[in-house]
Image (cartoon, rainbow, N blue to C red; front, side):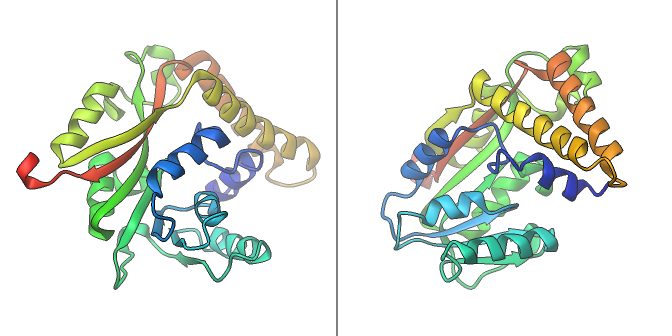
Length: 251
């Protein structure tokens, strides 16, 4: 089964593809969008939900999203147009690492897509290239709440995939960034995300038993659920940080 189709089905009930509640998303955007007239870029925008929430209720904000999956971009473009936001949200189907723009952005987002750049450090480099002077970054990535045990490793992780929260933030600040706000996803947010992910995919498989992909989807949901419940639950954390560049005189 195509990985992108699987991901789209799994996120049907939780369009923010990260363990964040609607209230947390709203609060993070409020902290990141202070002026109400910003240009926003989402690197790895997926279904474009961050972009929609950034522009809705903020008539002065314009947004651009980049994602490698052309089918997702086309579907997202239609959905955004249907909501009357097509003139304020532009979408590009290409590798986010190769995207270029003549004008910098006041807010650059990359939440849950650091893997597309090869890790957090490379993600920060990509964000920096697009950020206007004095601009803000909104970055979300995983960290280890505690040392991963064998169950977590058996779920497909490696011990060096992430570091603890303190070390993660230390690396970000050493790279010349200052956190001005942050959110650590709660167990409740993680559980809602994982139940939604596995539940939506399982439901689709049950409702479309005649589809050639149904068996693979059903198995993927079960494997993911087992990996979460018997492995990384309360071990894998997720931090979403609002960042500003640190002036050289303060380094």
